Every structure is written in structure tokens, then in C-alpha cells.
Length: 265
Image (cartoon, rainbow, N blue to C red; front, side, top):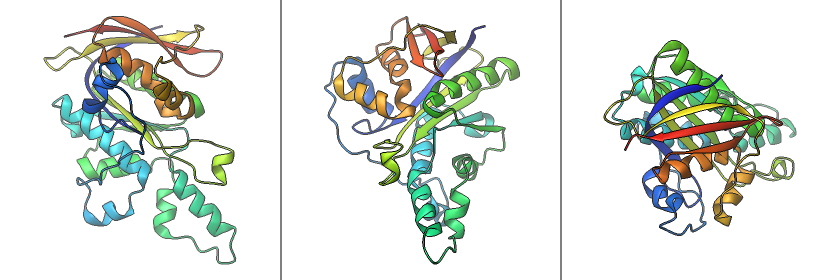
């Protein structure tokens, strides 16, 4: 079975990829990629108290999500949302582990409420005022593809616009030795049931046993390999090139996810 939707907005943030607007010429091959640390903006849409409490993973999810919604000229309050991450807040996990391993095991309430996997969904609701359904999932290294399938399912079954937010954050040492994610990364896709003036492409996705695609640019391929959310880069590269095509994304072995793209512009 294949699921389809129209893509009306894209957002992204990663190392050397400050936004979709900045990343598009890089992914299209007209501008060279330069690796540098991720620049994560403060979430100005959050009230000051919540802004202070928000960790990197929340800031990344909100930055990508807002860019996608703004690009598609959409109202975030009208969109269902799917949040997908392989592990979410690595820094917070590290801090909690250090506290629990110490003599004083009293956990910070802020640390505790940021430890749940659905924290970014909660912050998104605060920032946007959205009271629409939000789904939060995790599928380890296949989390981007799993999130895309879930978002497309909601578009098809419920007939409603759905925002996919896929994101990851770095794990500091010593956790990084077991889960070597070196940097935060986020991708957001605004998926709609019908074509509009803002539609960039129609995408159709379904499981396949084909081998996942790779990226020719070494720096971008390195990101794709080591950051689960960046597994979506081959799809964004095809979209940046604005042409019809097919990409195969890493999912849950032995399955992959094939995505067919039909450009609208």
C-alpha cells in the first residue's frame, strides 16, 4: 500500500544547514557544503519562562516546524502533528544519569519534565496554541521514515493537514560512546491532503526491500549516516532539485521506504 500527500512547506536545521532556504542550494549542488556547528535559534514564540527551560532538542524541533509552517502559509493551530525522534534530549538524559549516580539524587523538576519523549510536542502546543492531535513516536534509526509514514497515514485517513517534525540531539560523553550522535538535526514537512498554490510536490511513499540511497557529497553523507533524523536528507535533496524522481530511505531493516516525488512547480 502507498500513501500520498502534497508537500506545502519544508523546514530544516543542522550542522552547516541553518534553514531550508539556506540548505536548498547546497542540496541542489550549486553551493558547496561547509561543515560547522549547528546554530540553534532561541524559540521566540515561547513565553520567557518556557524559553529558559527549553533544551536543544525542543529548540531544533520548533525552528524546523515554524519554518515549514511559515513557508506553506499555514496555521499551525489547524495542523495535526507527528513528532519523531530516535532518542530526543541527550543532554537532559546525561544530566539525569549524573544526578542519579551521585549522592544527592534529587532531580530538578525542569529536568524531569523535559525527560519525557513528548516534551517537544508540549512546547509546540504552548508556542503555537495548537490543540490539534499530536503523535509522538520513536523507531531508533528508522525514526524519520516511521514519522513520515505516520504523518502520511494521518493525511490519508483523517483528511487533515499534518506536520511531521523529525529531530535528534547529540549525546555527550560517556553516552556518546554507546549512541554516537554528534549533533542536533531537525526536518519538518507540512503535508496536506489537497494541492494548493503553495504545494511544492506530491509525494507517495510505501515500504520496499530496495537498498537505501546515499548522498554523493561526503559531508552530507556523513550526517545522513550518523544522525537518524538526517536519514531524510536524500528526500530533501530530491526536493531541492525540484524534479520528479524516486528516493529510497532507510527504515527498519530489511525494509526501506520508497518515496516517489512529483514536482508541482
